[in-house]
Length: 147
Image 1: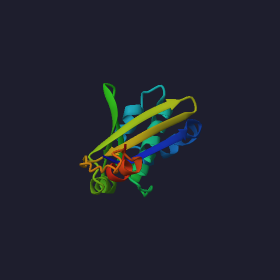
Image 2: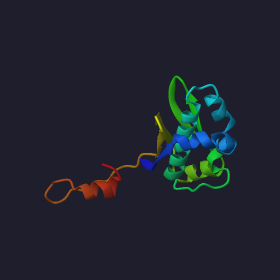
Image 3: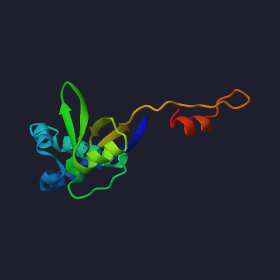
Image 4: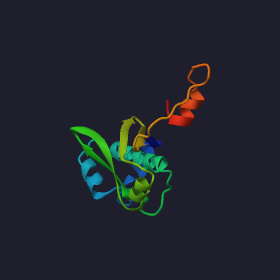
């Protein structure tokens, strides 16, 4: 079951001007190390910032002091990036029933973007049929939550 979805896009030109000034307030040491030797370092950090913003949106949480550093985007060249949560955001995710977080990052000349999907346990669907034996989309959405 989908618990939350968030999306964000960042203008990378803005990041060129501000990343050095704010990087330690936004990123964990592991994130900074992962991007340190990349040719596209600013784009990679902008995509991670977009993922952090998307994660906050998916959790229905605002930016509080230090909240961005409670979200860590962990990269491995052999697999898709992952989201790690800490502190109050990890507690919020547990309370919301989040079991898995999916993240997708991208960047293209001038922009970086990310999507985060938070997934919880699957609920058993109880779908009722109308008397004419047809399925009603409103029934599916109300009973299942997705279709």
